[in-house]
Image (cartoon, rainbow, N blue to C red; front, side):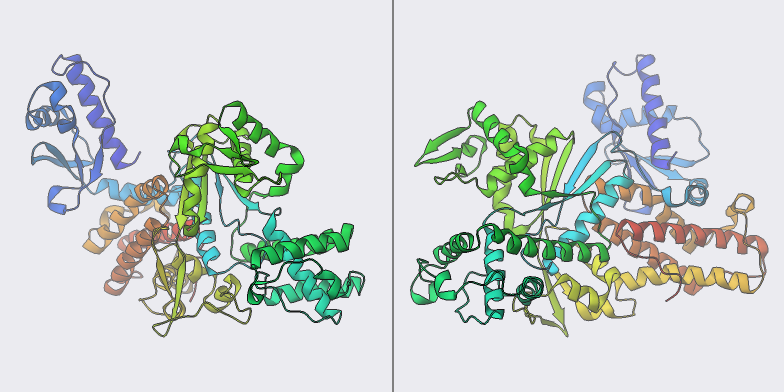
Length: 586
């Protein structure tokens, strides 16, 4: 049992005793809050229970605190107890809990620090979910690193976590991609045209068109004059780019008939496969890739709309069907079925989230780009209208990452003319640096990504600094083998020999790991793990630079080796929570 939990049990037992002796009115004892102190002179942990219960006990908080302290039994983990301020109970611990932490790390291995706060709760996290209309860019990369780290964290905290990528494989954007690919294909067939302002222009569109041309030859060729018949003029010609591209989609469907699906599917599949590959190489795997089209094919879209209608939250206006989202605090009502009978993206979102609820998940977590903040209120409104509890759904917004090189902000353009891809970033700085840097800030904070720093091998580079601590410990263990010195048996080592301030600083850091995991998971803040690892690495590097490990004193040598073994394990475990490797040499 962790020190914090042991103290909670001690205090709870005293409160039960006070109630049984009629010194405290009978109550359901609330959760006892034990927190680490910020200043060493105030002890190791502090408890505010006397202030919480003072009013109920009808006595001064400090008097109640004294009553509790007087009845606390002796414990080998507690050196002394002091009262402070209006009624805080401050605990000063012996070194025994620190030594026990080392034993726990060695015995529990990669499970050390894991918690059970999420036991019995099923959570689904949907993240990235970029439209399959182009490659992933650096903004998607931040969402991928954050979402995957959060999933790992919640699993470590005891949650049953399911991760999902929602593939937007239906709707207008996919049709714009299909038309873009077909027009490039027509150019490969020898046609000349002014490429639409609202089409996708990246080089990847050429690549997809070329793959169709290689496999199909001129089978899908149509005369360009026929393609533009009846299509409204484009923006550069005084027209409207939206109407122009929609007209081209309609013409492509008419001219290609059943063959339109060839172009559509080729574009969808090639880009989705590329996205899968990028994410897999980035260390991000999903339990499920959910198809938007399946909502239409399975009838779930129709069922969701019927349920909203049954609950009285739909009405008709100007030929369209509207959802009364203002009933739940949204700024305006939202269209779910357009006047042409087509469902909106919002209708798909409603059906998808209802499907998640129907699959039995207790909590739904969506991770979206910050530019989607306007969608939060309407989706929350829809779920409430579908009888879901408000707090079952949570949206976490991820801000964009701004790249810098040489102190200068980078233009977000590449040869594709659109953005820096995640693959280009990974190729430049590597997966480990990319993932660590992405999660060093709260997701809702803007982040500046310094490419030079991410590639540097210096203590200023946080991921290098942490990984180097792990590698240094591995090097010490390698030297142990070279000198033919035995690896100590942790069970037989006298940890009481670890009395140096630097050693206690490391042990204190190790003892915090469980609390950091709980806090990071509860607050959905993987950056807490990154900060913790930097602090632990700093404690180790300071220790390494000050003391020798492979000394003649066998007892002290073995104690120090077991201490750094435990440190290596926690460094590796923490890095794994962020999806970052723990190299043995650097």
